[in-house]
Amino acid sequence: TLTKGIYLLLLIIIFKKIIILIKRMLAKDNQNEKKTLILKSLKQISICTFLIILNDILIFLIGNKILSIFLFMIK
Image (cartoon, rainbow, N blue to C red; front, side, top):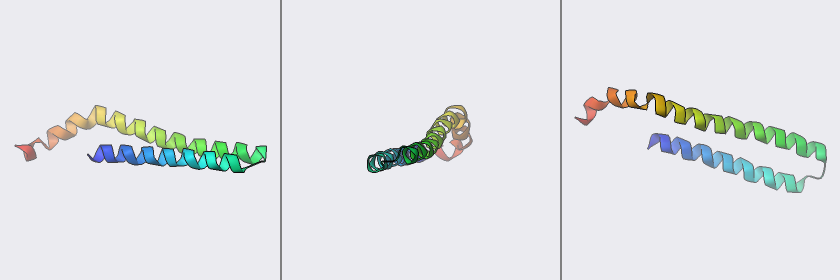
C-alpha cells in the first residue's frame, strides 16, 4: 500500500502541474513567456515521471528480496 500511495501522490502532482500549465498558457500572451513556462513545467513533469518509473523498477527488482527479509513477521 505504501508504494501505491507514492505512485498516486506522484500522479496527483503530475496532473496538478499539467492543469496549472494549461491555465497559465491560456492567460499568457507573450510567446517567450509561454516558451519559458513550458520548459520549466516539462522539467518538473519529467522529474516526477522519472521518479514513478524508478519506483516501479525498484519494486520489480528488489521487491521480492525485501519481502523475503520480512517473511518471518508473517509466519
